[in-house]
Length: 257
Image (tube, rainbow, N blue to C red; front, top):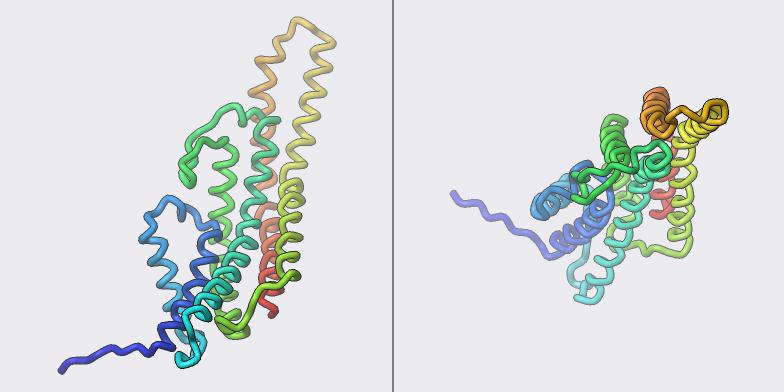
């Protein structure tokens, strides 16, 4: 007995529209190691997530769909996905920004290594910040919040029924300012400690000019920065959750839900 699987044109159009939204978001959602995997694996992930949301696919009347209308819907869905992905990417980029602020004052910016995500030379603190942010992303359940946001968006805003407006773009731009404030919140205590270390070394240099402060400054500042980061590690999940709440709020406003 043979079974035949038939798909209507409306179902195929709904699949393509949801896939455009999911793929647009995945191109920016900073999953750890996602940029290092083959393109086929990333496409397969987008298809799997799209199929997982099959119960929330929109009902598309194929008789009213033209090529230009379908292309316009797909572009709109990709734009929605990109907006969601950018909003979530800002959350983890705040950690990278904090690491860039600390790199040179702490002395870690003078050495670089290969970033496993981008295959480019990056500072040690930047790579460490990316790995920590990626692990916290999964440990705090933010990946599940992304999937929940997609399911909610398909329930409230069916594919092909929404177009981004100026208010949505302004909300994403405003969220970008939080990237810098969050990064400064993480880096400021360490920078303040390093300034105190510089002042102490300057006073020692004035008291005794024979001291080889240049050879002492680098290891002292590196160890002080590392110790302060270890002390601040307990606050990082709270900071990430706070900014992630703002990002998901902006994503909901973008979708009008």
